[in-house]
Length: 218
Image (cartoon, rainbow, N blue to C red; front, side):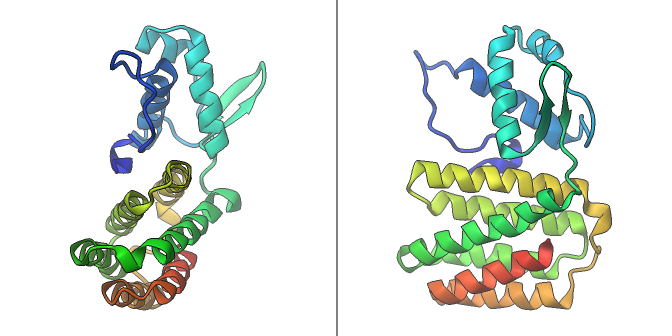
């Protein structure tokens, strides 16, 4: 999984090895948003993206629709396309929802997950619990969600978690100023409980603890 590099896992419908134009456009615009080239409320120009990518407007529009469906942009037909406000309650709720999806995925896969993978997942959770800055915590959150998405075999379910993770990342990244730099005691406790449950391969306990942790992050 490569969410951190703005390349969410998806089935590539390649034609002679070429990435479809809408996918290229999606990755290009998404990467610009994640880098902070465009902030909440900034207007996006389809013409500019078409020029940057040397393609027609149609694949750009398809990419914009996909970004809208995820919740990353707001579209007003015939007027403007803007980067979403990631500090809204709706965007913040995506953090908790990503935890719900991750918990459900762990409940289904944890009992058959290799010890080494469980150890890595637990280590990511422990990083969340002891992170000293919002940036460190956010990086650990994304690493954990990315690793969980890799456990999901069903392509659509995996993509759903990936898309929720992207929105959660934006909500964490662009609203970081509203989050405490020090991990709270509740977050540390929830992260520790989840880590221990994952190492012990206890799916139900892990699901509950992961959901509790992400509720703390909202």
